[in-house]
Amino acid sequence: MKEEFDYIVVGLGLAGISFCEQLRRNHKSVIVINDNSQKSSVVAGGLYNPVVLKRFTSIWKGDEQLDLAMQHYKVLEDLLKTTLDYKIPVYRKFASIEEQNNWFTAADKPKLTKYLSNKVIQNTNKSINADFGFGEVLRTGRIDVNKLIKSYKTFLDYNGLVLSESFDYGALKKDEQKVTYRNIKAKHIIFAEGFGVTKNPFFTSLQLSPTKGELLTIYAPELKIDFVLKGPVFLIPIGNDLYVVGSTYELYDLTHNTTEKGKTKLINGLKSMISCPFEIVNHVAGIRPTVRDRRPMLGRHPKFKNMYLLNGLGTRGVMIGPYVAKKLYEFIERGMPLEKEIDIARFD
Image (cartoon, rainbow, N blue to C red; front, side, top):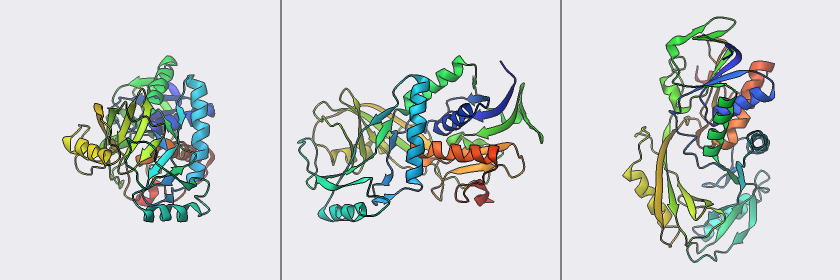
């Protein structure tokens, strides 16, 4: 194995892959160290949607995020020779006439008009409980995150660019010009560990507020929908009458164990939306690296100038990952300043 690289990247979730792609496209060499211990990307529903459907508001930097993400996943599909991006509409279930009115008000706002349809879709599916119909979100879809991570790791494996092991922080040596990890030397190291950053001794003052999420996969042969249904929970069709149901938000039980509490909450939400029988075929849990101020965390270590963090993607990692990876790359390689609201210096 080559022993000198431009970058070491620790972690291979959505953040790590997004940054690796910035490096590959800019002809920078990289070695990835990953132990598969962080499950937030693996249990992600994979939806990209530029609207906060609870409040009918636009997300932070939604236009820029979406445009970059669409380019990013198209390049990855070509590289990995597989389909990752499944275009699918999102239907927001209305609970009342008031919600319909709020939707129409939001659809008239300049930032939302291209994302929110101004028509109410009437429910014609007898398996769905939706007396007030749906609002359709435009330019949405689903990234198959599991396939992405597995395929990208295979690509790195084939090229000898990944070490499948836990990172040993004690083995990292630092000086002004480089970092050395065992027999590997690099100009820079990027920590993209997700929730694993809580064990990182170099970044201890971050205002991380992680949340546990649980997902169910159900088999519902009578449901027959070809759109994502969003109500108290979301329901994502993944083919063969299988649907992903999610997600929960748990602040205190930060283990990767599934719980009866989480399953019950998801089932209750699901039953308020559909009336057909279903069978649970899978139940998974993971910890999201969410941040108190709802913004990602990236930037340079205050003392070690060739050490960087890329973290805090939260619940929208599919969309925000490519955006923040590009910002961090341009900060390191081109000296372009980071936006203050995402720079880890805001925690100093």
